[in-house]
Length: 137
Length: 250
Image (cartoon, rainbow over all chains, first blue to last red; front, side, top):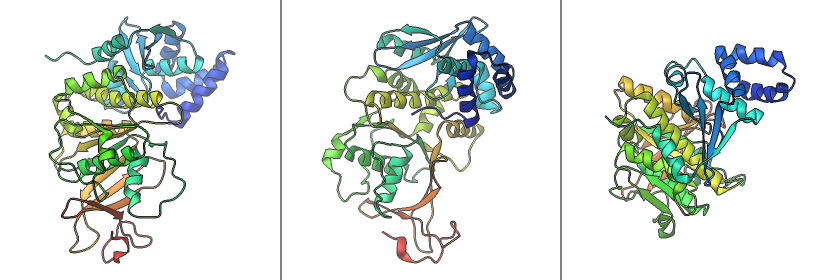
């Protein structure tokens, strides 16, 4: 049950994978056109190896992205969620962005097959997922 | 899940075509309707349908135990199917989060269908949109994980019921917009009838781009059994139901 990205994004990501080795600048421009500054920032995050795929023996996994501010954000790739404020605002509230830069970075790293990998226990994964739920006042 | 619901809806009515792919549950589905519009009954009917398919257990999450088991669309509640439905009653949003976050730790076979009734109650506790988005995303992620555990070619369906109000406040509107982003398929239930003197519910199923919108007429007999038929339409006018013949009646 994969997340359904707009077809144009899917297509672009596949082209990105093909083009990345040749550093095709045209694909990069289209990426920037579609996503604005998020594209440059997302590519930057990928370059800096800021994305970590955390998985447990159960097969369940989650992504964490080290943002430019030094803060770590949690992304669920299966269904399109990021814990960053930009996602909450631009994607959810205002609906004028398709993705935040962290989610874009995650999808790019999936397609380019480049990200850090971290294995944790099932229990630790539960804790990581629960951490996103803010403590009650 | 839209596929499973469509199978529930089509079983009594139109021809049961051979193209059914029982392994496919379809996209996650959101069931919407006012209080008393039959959401729980339809959710439970889907649970019985999936339990009967033998693909795996069914997980039914709800805040409170059901007062009485809805009858579904069969003549009797098959105990073999009932046994396959596991009920869980997370009493609070926090407990629901805990349940979803630890779903991968649970032993035993992965369910083939995950159902949640009364999402509005859990969302009401946490009005902040980001928390609501995380809860919804976790529901989808949990179903995705179960799908992965079921193996190639098999899916865990997801169906969530949300109560809507006549007078929606801004919080409700935001939650609904959020849900519609995450749930490609939706089914609206509202009291309606195809003709004068008739009663029941109109179920409008939108599979989210995978097929046309279809409408169904749901009624409950005095013994509680649910009857489903395609919403009778005049040729070329899908919204007209008045004066139609009883061709579609169960």
